[in-house]
Length: 266
Image (cartoon, rainbow, N blue to C red; front, side, top):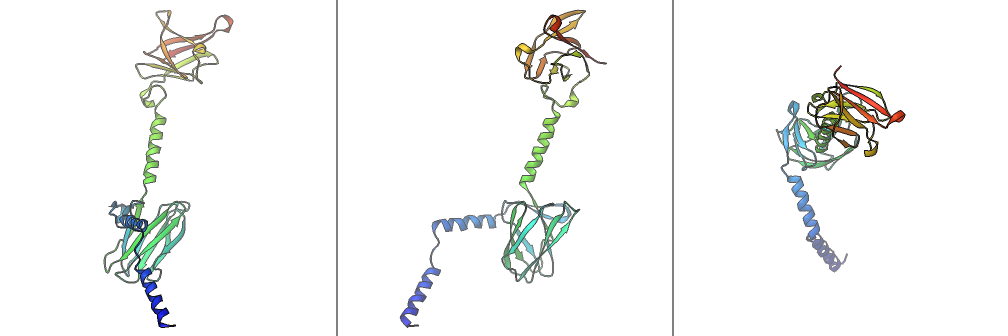
C-alpha cells in the first residue's frame, strides 16, 4: 500500500475512534449509568436472601470463585433466554425448586476468577431481568431474589376487593355488623331479596331497580295501626331512617294489589 494512502487511512481511523458522542448518545449513556449505578432498595429476605426491588435499578450481584451465587426468579416464571456478556469466564447453570406447576427457576452463577465483571440479561414469560455480575476474591451473595412492585399492587387490589365485597350495599358497613333477622311473607314481582338493619336504619333491598311510580308504599304497623313512613329510594334499595319491627309493602289496588309483610325476629 502506498505510504500516502496508509497515512490517510490511519488518520481517518484515528478521527473516528476519537469522535465525540452526540448529545442524545451522551444523555442516553448518562441516564443508563444512573440506572446501573443507582443505590436502589436492597433488603434481607427469608433464609438470608438478598432482595432487590425489581426494575428500580440494575442489581449488582457479587460472586466469588469456588462459590456459587443463587439468583432465584419468581415462582411459575418460565425462562426464555439467558445471555451473558462474558460467557467464557462466567458460567450460569439453571436449577429449579418447588412443586410442579409452581416451580421457581434458580440461576446458579460462578465466576472463574476474581476482579472481573460482566452483565447478564434474562428473558422470561413475565419480564426481562438486567443484572450486573461482579466477582470478588472472598465476598459473595449466596442467595439473591426480587420483590415485584406489580405483585404488591395486585395484593392491595385483592385486599381492597375483599373489603368491598364484605361491605353490604346501602349500609356501607361490614356484614358482621348488620342484623338480617327479618321474615318476609307474601308474593309480589318486586318482593325484597333481603332486609337488614344497622340498628339505626332499615335497608330493604329489591331484586332490581324500581322507578318512582313502581315503588311500593311502606306502612309501619304500630299499635294495630298502619302508618305511612318516609323513605329514600336508591336504585334497588329502600332506606328507612329508623329501625322497623313490623311493616307491610303495598303496591296497586283491588284485585291487582300486591302486599309483602315484614317482621323482625323469629
